[in-house]
Length: 154
Image (cartoon, rainbow, N blue to C red):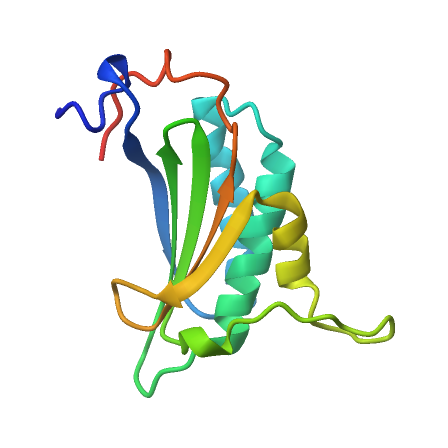
């Protein structure tokens, strides 16, 4: 393992989990369930429920707004970056279409990124390394220190 991912020698980045989901509504509860199960052993100090809500909103947006002419997938990944948690959701949509909306009180949709914005320290939308769009959200201080980062599998 190289020093960039081994927390004993300093801060690093490690992918803690990933899922590939079919772009259908039933993938949203599956993503929530598996994220909650797979993040728990890492014992984050942040609220797992808040992070699960962000996963739910980001995967929902990817399912609703991702577009491709052929069969496509939603990719969910989460990383420990120093003491922060970064959640990424990739889809084949267009990055320019991701925007924070200010829905009216009676609007049925449009609050997903508002929830992410209120929970995350920051969020970003842009081109995905897989093509299409990635929306990522960062939760600061998800782990109190880097001391117990230890060895992780990438």
